[in-house]
Image (cartoon, rainbow, N blue to C red):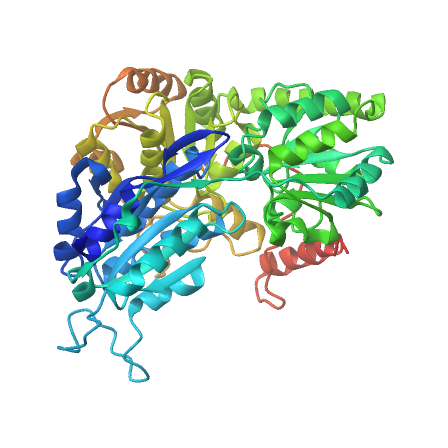
Length: 617
């Protein structure tokens, strides 16, 4: 079949399907893009011909389109995603941040940046990186370290093998992330007689590997000898659909379950075995149990520094880890017993082998008591009635109360992800969507758009601070264009609340973290800037409601929820009111020498906390 390389690419993508447990879905829900000279005549023309076979969505920012694809893919348990196309030059490099986010979070997304001319007939061309060392280098080489698979299609004959390799990686739960196929603009438009077989419907089955008997036996032996085990549920527990298997294991054995950011919602917040978030942004319930845990079972977690409190939270002198993970890089961390398997299959295997065994009654009762005590802390944070401006925890409480059990809260960066992790009462495995692998400012609205595209029946509440909103708000216009309803809670606190608090804790006195004029001394410490973010949101086509108190915010949010269109609720909060403390440290180095007393004091505290760090060998 004679087609251009771009037409062949689009036709191939439209014929790809994924399948798990007998359920089949399109691997690509569509293609997000922004056209420029590098892709308008190639992939742009091909997408025009394809129509709804591979629907095109016009984005406003190249980084944001990748975030939308990630939000969609995560909501679909990594079984379906989007392709993203840009021109060469700044359009391509704008996607690099999104690629890093996808790869760090192990979320599949296909990136199709245009590239310079393969034929080099008119070098240097517009937006070409003229590298004197090699004509084979372009700005798309920036994608290599942040992609799990990277290729450049220099000839039509290379397309088939590159596309098949890309699909293999995108559908591999152990190795997925951003896949980049750089496509020179002249090659995109070049015609070639492709074999018909390339465009036949192809199904990529997502398998569920089981743990090896020897490793399973080692894990079971550890657990049966333990007195205070703890399960830590990560994102893999949700992506693999393992929440029912997790609940069964917890109920039959009495092992309490803590949750990472990606794993939050693996159990409902009020389940008898649920002890909430763990680590630096966790609950005191989970962290107290973690300190005494003799065996820790990580389910689909990569053990980030926030989860482990920079390797201080698991303090038992003889603590051992069992790592149930489909990815070898995670299964072998902390010198753990590796259960190299699908999360659901591994949990089912553990349940079968632990039949008749349960934790000591005192351990089960302690977990329940600690969880109830933390829930009372949450209730106080939700209802503190701080004046004159509300506390951020009160705003979170209102959103939580007005949202339904299956509604989704979306967040990514700043102080709110930490507050949400410890305070949000999750009732559904898909009800909590916080990107914290890359903690990328600007993800919120674009990611929320992907969440809503993935499941239009759910209400989506995007929580975003003013700092993150200013990074990337443009996809409000995309939501309006597509008639996709989001409810965006825009929290205005005139700067970077989380970094301000962190700066203060390391002795840097909130320097450079507020949105203010320069004062007479030349520092950014004058009056607040007269920035009107509500007016900005309205200019992008969103409906906007303003609130000044908790009560007016509650009324505005109820009105926004009932609205059929994208609505932004703007509310100002007091950035100096912290959420309840997790009691866990996070390693951020403090200057070893300083003229400031505040820095010297912070350094002393830093050295004290460093003493608790462990190697877990």
